[in-house]
Image (cartoon, rainbow over all chains, first blue to last red; front, top):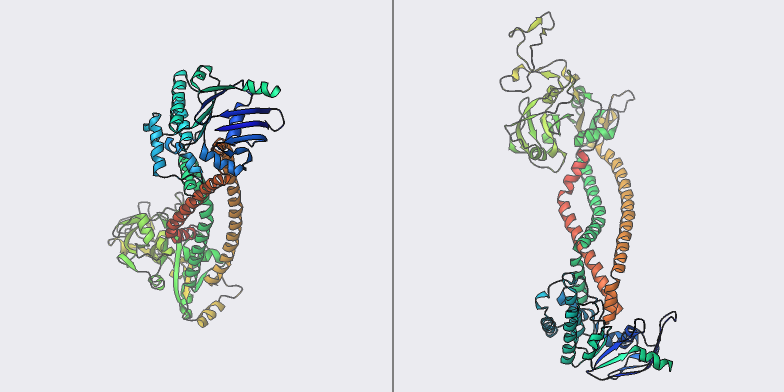
Length: 222
Length: 392
């Protein structure tokens, strides 16, 4: 269960102010966030994940108050509880597909990389059709393959919350559907909540719920 | 730390060329000053040992350093020649054993040292292959010279021509190599030893030819000499058949030598002998090589200290350049660092990763420098001898 209330955030310089009066997402729910560019969709994901510090309001993720955490606590919470699929994949060029999937374990002091995790990485790669590309570097992969690696990396820690920022934005129509299938399947398999920012209205019917950021703007104005 | 090391190795392996350049640059910064010190120390040891083993040296007045370098290391620093009479003067004094040296010519680039058999006893030189010098025209090669020239006992060696356009100058002489010396790790290893008379033959002071009268080549035969016509040719090789025809013109005591090594039995005789060369009108000088070396070493140490300073400055500049390159590469890795933070990486983990990368590069450079220095330490002594013997 994710509960956000009276969330406020202003970017340095005050050029942009985000206000979200209330947002609740049930565990296992698949939520799509839409809205024009510049309305704060990515900022919301950053606030939920603790990448950006909350200025005011409440961000409660499964009983953990992200808004009250220190930077160190937010980092530890993020790496354990949240899987993030970035718009530009953000793969590490010098690591193979296998090591990119295991990257959170290589970076973390709280996660332990053991045989079971390695097996899980191989299983995830197999599930997304990358079993024969575990030894390859990102530069040798197609866009769709890179996105699948990014999804595997987001899922490897078995997070309870999966955030996807324009995860299908760089893909062709055939790949978009496949990637979304994959995200849904993996989220369901791990009972994870999925919050996805998207501009692709064709994909919206497949989500449990769609939130339009313009509604937040209207509510805030009211 | 294990994961940081893993990521660091992965990064360095992926950028293997950049890593190699950094490692080699750092290894050179570490090893070149040490190598210079090693060579300087070996040169110092060489100079000191050889000088200490040579009590006194007599030569023409002038540069004591040139005299010593030519007499000890057979360099091209040619001092004024003195006459053989100076060697006999030392003998006649009964104060020291006299070992004359004639270092003027080369064969295959190696110095030809004309001397007497006393030199072999004095330096403790031993034959490794073949035999020692017995007759005119024979040569014995030092260990390194033998290896470089590739001339075995029984084969011949031709002295280098001095000046192709000087008809009265020294003509190349074909010498028979009769033996190789055991290595001594001194300048003797690089020399070609011949009898003093053979050196004089190369210089043109002695020669061999057919009988002018018997061969009908005499133009004039008025006493005291015979003038031959242009058909007369001099032998360019000394063989058992023509050795008896070789002869010298003029008094032997006037023949030139470059130096005399004087070996007095004790300090008293040495002091007396040195006193005999103090007169203002004395044409020769007597030097104590050890004293000359001390002066030279003081200069070498000063140069060494300056080199250390230069290496320090160049090393610091290079380290700064490497540091700059490293920090610029960090800016190129902004996206990677951002991803790491987005995923939940602690900033200390990134610092550990960078520290691991630097550590691996420094350790690799240290190992490379150590390997390089170990390999060079085997040849440091040879390098020192080469520097000393090739000094002009």
